[in-house]
Amino acid sequence: MKAIGLTRYLPIEDPQSLIDVEIEKPTATGQDVLVSINAIAVNPIDVKVRSPKDTIEDTPKILGWDASGIIEAIGDDVTLFEVGDEVYYAGDITRPGAYAQYQLVDERIVGRKPKSLSFPEAAALPLTTITAYESFFERLALDRNGGNKGETLLIIGGAGGVGSIGIQLAKSAGLTAIATASQPDTIAWVKQLGADHVINHREPLRPQVEALGLKFIDHIAIFNNTDGHWEAVSDLIRPQGRIVSIVQNETPLDQTSLKTKAAGLVWESMFARSMFQTPDMIEQHKLLSYIADEIDAGRIRSTLSEILTPINAENLRKAHALIETGRSKGKLVLEGFPS
Ligand SMILES: NC(=O)c1ccc[n+]([C@@H]2O[C@H](COP(=O)([O-])OP(=O)(O)OC[C@H]3O[C@@H](n4cnc5c(N)ncnc54)[C@H](OP(=O)(O)O)[C@@H]3O)[C@@H](O)[C@H]2O)c1
Image (tube, rainbow, N blue to C red; front, side, top):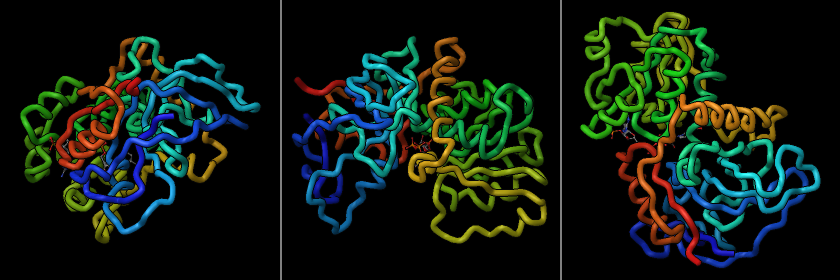
């Protein structure tokens, strides 16, 4: 089957950084489904895994953790899906990724594709949706059905992949969403997605929050640059409030202000369940199917912003280069393998 892989970890400008390869089609066993991939999305994690280093792979390493497609075969223990089902999923960082015509994925982390979305619109969603959903409704323990209605949620990095679905999840839960964005088109994008207020993450945050008539924020989600925003968010979080971060810090985070306010920091890692095979892995199947229902009911929309065709090394190098700028909005998706 066709795939796009790497054997050396090179700067993205190097044509060898991602290459078109032929590899063996895998076979589904156990709880795995074999998916014939129709569309894939590119995420910062792809770029982080591909970052230049001296390691050399004996066989091509296949990246990619966002896909939509059709189930082609199922393992003997599969109970949630049948051959022919249309699905969307992020997959497991410890296994070969979605830059391939076929991919094996554990059924417990696969959702049924929203019926009202095309394959590219669906491929835009899974990794970022799992991240934002787990951040808000599990790590921050907010109520998706409106139990925190009217409370404020600050989303740092509102126009990114995670922020774009995060704003919509926050609004559907009845929260007041304050999103950050810094460019005219990303500001317009977060407003379109439903943000109640937009503030600029390249300017000091406290004066902008005070200009909204607020002293503290009830809940904060750091979806970009934990180090850069830490001082501001630990000042802004309300006493006994909680901050969730999805981005690894590079330097130690001073906890003094949190201790004084009895506030807390909690981490989200959307690969934790699959990586550690936690007993509740199936929660990701359930949440993706819940979001599919919300989309089909017209309450949430895809965060797709651009499609590149076909799925090949040249287009994936373009997609990685865009993610590396740190200035993309929503999700870039690649569709269809060349015949
Ligand atoms: N822990 C997890 O499970 C998990 C899951 C998914 C993603 N992540 C991580 O979360 C981060 C965001 O992911 P993503 O997919 O949303 O990224 P993305 O789509 O590449 O984010 C692009 C957006 O980031 C904004 N941005 C750039 N610099 C910023 C800054 N200093 N402060 C705030 N926002 C800034 C930009 O907004 P403007 O153009 O308006 O400046 C841009 O719209 C990445 O580091 C990713 O690896 C972690």
